[in-house]
Image (cartoon, rainbow, N blue to C red; front, side):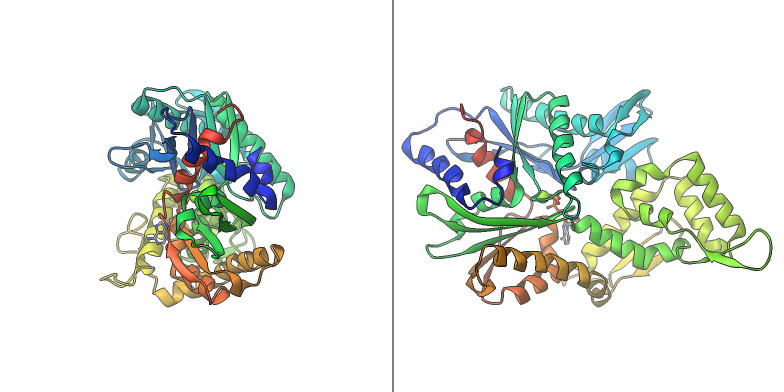
Length: 449
Ligand SMILES: Nc1ncnc2c1ncn2[C@@H]1O[C@H](COP(=O)(O)OP(=O)(O)OP(=O)(O)O)[C@@H](O)[C@H]1O
Ligand SMILES: [Mg+2]
């Protein structure tokens, strides 16, 4: 499987023939293999015609789709992508889910719940999303796609090899349940390298810096003329934009809902800090749907009753009762993007009016940079470790190619420039480089085309 070759230097032997085939003969037909970038935050699908990637319009005029579902209780149907987000923000009756990729490999994947009257586990839920992508591609092209070349992070779980292996097993199962007969995997930054091969000139050493919603992934590569690319090594870490959101939420938002505040004991004058777990889960995109249980609501009701500052815990109670966890996560994400925008007209803030009228948290860029500095340093360290692993000096890297939505973050830009001061910075197609590469590679993912 391509996925198993991710750090093998001879990978160029796999990629080079792609281009020889492309050069040698004109391929008149569309590839029967669909390239799928199943992202933590956004997904996209594409196929190749004559070696040129074509992306599917997954929503009107859009070639990316938020990886989100809304189980609409009133209409008894699943809404995908931007529509799911609109239903959530509009306050429709239903259950919203996002960042499900982060659950792959964890026991939560096999937990089931009743949705629209049917018991489903998260394998089935992810499969529904992938099936939707398949259907959209088939409708758009009039062709059936039984095979998929899927992206995968270099590591789903960089700190846990067993979970990492399980994540691939889970995702494979999701593809099978979605109706694909076969799936192969390609590391996401290697797909981005394929898509960006023309950025390199002879003698260049390129580093793909793919900072997404759930992971940060790197590939060090050279261009081999028209014949393909030579991958030196790839490496990844489980930190992405959703972790930035989580960190910002924990540091700046959750204290307004009672995190760290004191709870009185039922008897006596002693107090203890409110338990942390509920705040940690509420700040974590993929954990939010698991919080809306009767037991959790009752536990928070008790905390509010004995809280030294009931006003704060009452907000938490309100968030759980009205299921506002995702609305808050969107508010944090919007605050992050605003604080990252050097041209923003208004002072950046996290707007929590959904929780309480007039409640806002200022988020000056310097404060955000300080909150995320450690994660940015960890990410840059992985890139430096990658060059050491490939036995090249950081100064030998001549081009940094930024892709993925979180590569737009100023803290990432600065950390990477510091780590690779000699390299020229190139911004690839932030949201579509990976699917472009997967579409280019798709016709060659299976031995028989
Ligand atoms: N302008 C921006 N500034 C900062 N961050 C941004 C901006 N636009 C998007 N993001 C962040 O980018 C992330 C999504 O990026 P992307 O779509 O590349 O991830 P993904 O491919 O779904 O995730 P992964 O590859 O890790 O599975 C989100 O966390 C989002 O908040
Ligand atoms: Mg991605």
